[in-house]
Amino acid sequence: MGTRTNWSGNYTYDANKLAEPATLDELVEMVTSARAVKALGSRHSFNGIADSPGSQVSLAGLIEPPRLGDGTVTVSAATRYGELGQALIAEGRALHNLASLPHISVAGAVATATHGSGLRLGNLSSAVRALSILKADGELVDLDAGHPDFAGAVVGLGALGIVTELTLATEHSFDVWQTVFANLDWPTVTERFTEIMGAAYSVSLFTDWSEDGVQQVWVKSRDGAVTELFGRSPETVQRHPVGDNPGDFSTVQLGIPGPWNERLPHFRLEFTPSNGEEIQSEYLLPLDAAPAAIEAVRAVADRFRYLLLVCEIRTIAADHLWLSTAYERDSVALHFTWVRDQAAVEAALPALEAALAPFDPRPHWGKVSVMRPKHPRLGDFRALAERWDPRGLFRNAWLDRVLG
Figure 1 (cartoon, rainbow, N blue to C red):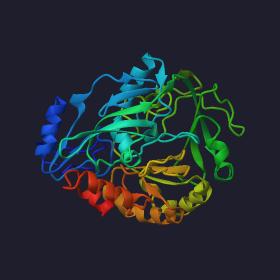
Figure 2: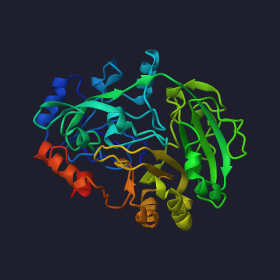
Figure 3: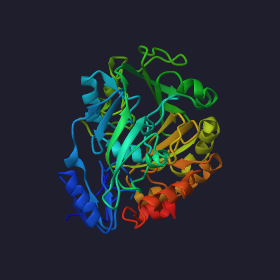
Figure 4: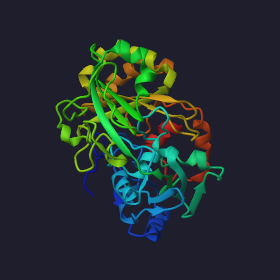
């Protein structure tokens, strides 16, 4: 087997085999006969969460068409949000929100608490209403909200077993108008943060942490195009959040309405998302700490800015899923996209993480950090994982570091 890396090329997998079952029975046989195994999704994590000291398994061969229920949709684990959105549009249905990339798999995004933006919008895992998990002994367990392990299992980090399908809440399809505004100074951002982030259904800020402030504000509205933001008019050309990358790679802006699945992501499914060769880090903090946290990062920005492609600031509503990074607190997320220099990024992160430490940061499970994650339910989840996987089939070096 040749060398395999994640999507951006910053992480090389140690797993000695990649299995690709064509049936559920084949998957069960692979799991029950393995000494160690992990599911490998769309490879959009930037750390070793999906690696294994044994083998990896892809569920791409088990994808079936989405099944609509009463206000829900049931999807195969390896389904990408881009394809799911297209299927839902055809049925007049929608998800409440999407991440910036439509290229990611549903199971992988849910397992890592990946999110979009919106003051009143939960992350992608908050839409889960049921899921099926294949355990180490070959038992396929179905969980819904009435199951005692449901809240612990949804954001499962791949530690309990292999998720085979998920049921998500849906709503009626809706249109979104996306506009981009340029250049908000730091005093406006910090003094009116909640007002800015609440200006529409979903709002994202992009900055390089220079003294000028925020370079771009992406505003996604369900109520018509937003035509003014603190005296500023919308941009009149397509923008990309990263450097000089083509604006055509981004979803349509300019206040032109379009279906939710073509506007809520930042990037179009048919193009390489973001910058491609990059590393990502992200930290979620209490929403009310946003102004102080922004000032704290500004104070140390000279120590990492030379590595930064862009930083995105988003908001996420609280939920009750144990390992959600928005567990029981409305959150602000500071998302850093770095040049692909692993050693330099890891050397710079301690200064950034020290600046954020007073605000109880929770690092994104699928991205690069050097801090030991702290989470109020981490001990409960450790016990849950030991009960579900007593022989450690789904453990790996990353989980050993996180769970201890």
